[in-house]
Image (cartoon, rainbow, N blue to C red):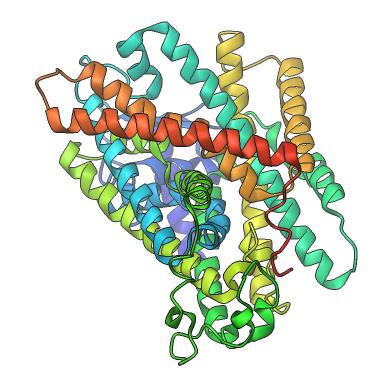
Length: 507
């Protein structure tokens, strides 16, 4: 304790010399924020604004005092730090529906589709990076800047509207996620559902109060929490597979025509493993079944891999920034994300086969406590992420409608409450998380992740540059557009017809 106190006092003195503030007025959180975002062994002047954010600038050479900041080895701007940021921006609640995607398309076709989505995501990220390199000097690196220099204010306005829809859709998906998962844990101990009450109560008493803060600095570690929970989920499902793969009762439901699945287990070391028959891996389907399965599966994979809006800020922060260096970051991060997704999807499918639910955690894991903890952990991550969606939506809405990011108090509260009420209303109406993820994966996510990067690339990059990539960019944009439109129409038809694909999963 004495050493800690002495070190903190030294930090306050050093911090005060740079900010010209009395040491008694310097809070520990201000020092912590400064150190977290500072570059190592650099001199800074740190200025704390009214809303608690800490901005930094290089210290003037005339100063005689030097303040050295020690930061963790994973630093913002480094390759490892950038890889970590991309991973936590990619891996999240979207992994809950990936085993269900495998169920619809079969194991090997499903994994191939997942890998195809990963490669397509890397390709379009590469298009985005190349397009950024052709922006005018000193231009801001962002989707809005790319749109402005591509097709002017019209496209920039359209992108702002798409972002607003994405923030809202993501908020709805997280309401569905935390309500369903907490209701699942509740049903283990009490034999009735409180889904609607959970959706309303949690958002009213936890999310809205947190959303009313004008600064989200206290929730900046939420993405790390979400990534940690996803890693834990992957480990849990993998371990549960080895524990429960021989339990035939887990597969007592489902849509098999041949009931032989009641008599074998799916342990990979078992002689009665299902790949002997082969139809589990390449389901016997006609062309219509294959088409409907693909347009349902592909948007779920798109939802899992779109990280494009978050990749540009990471690229801006990258030290000694270059396209090749960012490609290395993307290769590593998307590779790790793909590995996590493959573990979750394959283990979850092999465990429950055609009984996999749209949300893997709603399957019957024999009330194991590790699965309950995974459900609670991901629910907590979703709840703490919702204020960030509300914050970003409010800022984008204020800039679009009123021309300012900071709304007045009355408008601030009104927009926050209405945004939350609409999110909860749709979250109560559409309780299937796979449906919500599928709709987002066929609307805003392919636009931001696959179509807009191709548009920016074709407009900003000279036509004689990268001819093969230009052709592939156009082909993939047309392909994704057709699949997304077909998927959206099919999803609307399913909802209108009252179909529930989760009806035959093993609850």
